[in-house]
Length: 156
Image 1 (cartoon, rainbow, N blue to C red):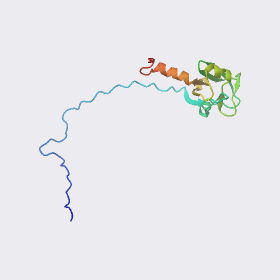
Image 2 (cartoon, one colour):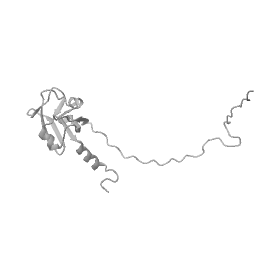
Image 3 (cartoon, rainbow, N blue to C red):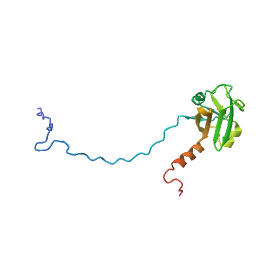
C-alpha cells in the first residue's frame, strides 16, 4: 500500500486582493551614532615589540633595519622613567653587535625597572635616527590617561 503524493504548496507571488510590496513616499532612516574620528598613525614613527633577555638584549630585526643600523655602529643610550632611548652617534658608549639587537646595560635596566622576560614597545624614529624602548608600565599609564576604563579608580 502506497500513500498518495501530496502536491507542494507554493504561495502565489501576489496576495489575492492585497497590495504589492511597493513603497509609497520616503522611508525614515534610523539615527546612527556618530563615531569619533580616529587619529591617523604618524608617518615618522614605526612600532614593534621586543622581549628582554637576561643580558639586556632586545631583538627586533625589522626595527633596526628601518634605521639602517649595522654591526659596529656606536650608540648612545639614555633612560628615564621606564623609557630607554638609543641614538646612533660616533662617540656612543655601546657598539651595535653582529646580530640585530639592542643591548641595554644593567644600570639603565634597573633605572627603568626592566627585568628579564619583560616585553617592551619599540618605537623607531627614522628622522631622528633613534629607537625608544617603552616598558609596559609606561604604556599602561599612557593608555589609562588617554581613555580611562569605566569605573577605574574606584576600589571596593
